[in-house]
Length: 359
Image 1 (cartoon, rainbow, N blue to C red):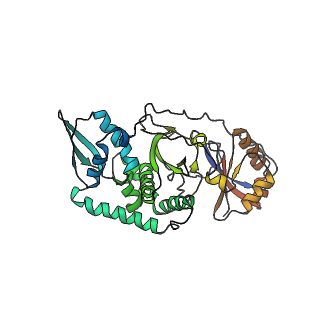
Image 2: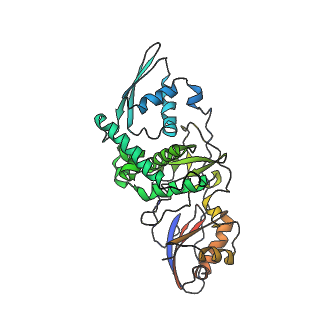
Image 3: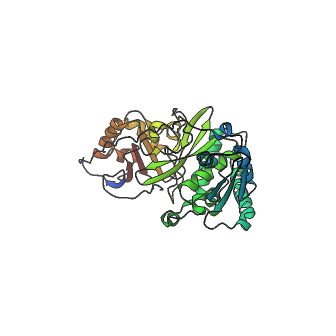
């Protein structure tokens, strides 16, 4: 579910307050949350290496076939694994819902059902619309000679600008286009899986290794992406970086495992879970918004250079964040940082982030 910023004076995971110029007051300090459990996938499967039939299986679906025959006997569990990996390798295959498994001694026939709102006769036209939408976004990005990091960041922002979170779809309990790359890129309305599959498709078209990761947060199911850059893996969550009327956030752009476990865990059904260790390409690190200690002048210098409606800063760990909360909010040093007598801020106690409204 998309992160929503709400202005409220309460010590919750994500809260906001407007601070006037008043004497020092006691504030409620952050709760120390437990990290989510790190989930190791047992015996990860790469279907491309494991199953000789997998490439043709993908190709048949990309030809928009509603029936696929595999010319050897395949266990149902292997078909399930193939469907999980399919969202990594071919996120443009957006129409699949259920499938029916008909095994024989030397072959398997699969017949597919379609998600809500898909008519098989209209599928070629819809597939072309998805390709055109991706072409349009990619044409707007920095050229192929630009740094790959900058192209991935621009694609992240372009998807967020194009798409809005589909709350009605989420609440419907159905399986519609809102959960697919088509919903995100063509219709501009999606839930988290649609954001993730849409972003995965853009990465595929750009030649960047990427995949879709599924897991759980406090509110339930969630989906996001991993990408590879210069031989290292990083996490990206376009859904949580979409803050409605504001410019795209980058708080969840190229984060690592340690930061991931503050807010979510990975499903045990995931085929592959990369190790995302480095923090050097995390956006807030590269932008200078990541602080390993609280230093008023350093924070003030960073915020003074921010442009746009808001500025977000992150602290390395719980103790450093508490130190920042005590000074910025308890001692109202945030007024010096923002250079104003009134400031609205938002705090995310799980992520150790304070977001300052500059409007």
